[in-house]
Length: 168
Image (cartoon, rainbow, N blue to C red; front, side, top):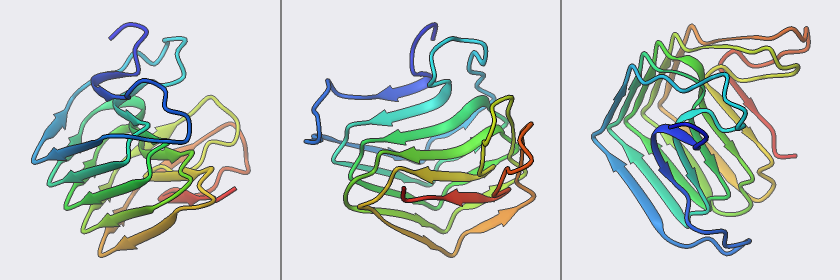
């Protein structure tokens, strides 16, 4: 998708300010071998992009063998649940969440394995999960497995091969 937010799936209702509306459910899907244009000028070079929702539920879904700066991006969404899902052998951050000001963010019974996030940017963290700008959200990670996730950056301060969680 040239100039768009995602190469496979994007859901972002018209700007709603702090009032998010609507919900999205992704159940039993497979995102396999999708390639986002990493050279595009747009910041959101992802496989799936969700923004400005009241709730997002992802369950029993696979993200495998994809190439993107961020595979799954969620922003300005109140309640997020990712359950029974697999993020494996992807090139790019598996899950990036930001601007989360209220509600719950639950990751449960998931596998994050062999995801690699190479970056030319300075201070890029979290090969599997990055959460930032989330001052009002409660994050819960349950019964999930992180195996051989990696982030590389020209910055020697890079943190979190598996995750980087920051509420600021």
